[in-house]
Length: 177
Image (cartoon, helix red, strand yellow):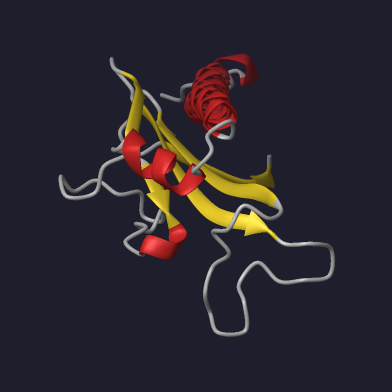
């Protein structure tokens, strides 16, 4: 006995296999799209956290600037800076901590601006008085000019962390007041 199979019956299995292949391809495309969206989402969150830390550090630097502006009215600026205590240094005294990495040990202190989920700190360093135009801040013998000639020069360091532990921004600026 001979069985005759029509052409239509032989093609039914092919349609099922093609549908499965297309379904797998669509699922793979969806998985790749989801993975890409997840990576971009993490990147945007990291950028946002860094921006937040940057603005917080900038706020700490502005706070330090206002403190320095008030200090510059003092008759004996070096003594006034020393009297401020934690986070205020006179370059000529030595002992100015390195800001990179930011000081975290209990022996090195910085002024704390904000407490909460993230912290912002600032350090103020009195560099001396800027000399007349064409002169150097540090003399030929290496001594810093602490006399009242010229404009006072300060360096301000500000640091802030983000919501994530690995995010940290350190800003620095030097200027004469």
